Image (cartoon, rainbow, N blue to C red; front, top):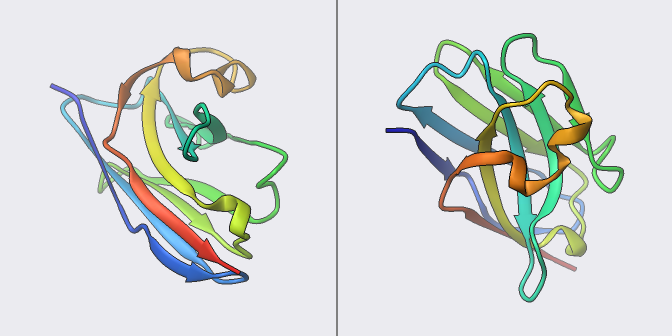
Length: 126
């Protein structure tokens, strides 16, 4: 049974940093692409970043490129999202997800992911 458990959310001032973690268990993720999505109240899931677990290749949404970094720890089976230079518009619930696919570009769609965590709230004050 696949489990994805996020942690690390919280309240931070604009310009600050947070690191989210997603502990993954239940199977080997070497053939998976892991993604981070966020959802603000009243809005749909928004793609943030994705990483291919096997080789570490990454893909980012334009809105976070240069500010956020996605990474994974193969030993700890944990996915990370380092968020720097946070803005009030980054405020949302952040979710990690696991899916399969060939192209990182194609993994911008939430429907490509079969497993989701419960989410962690990030609030950025101005």
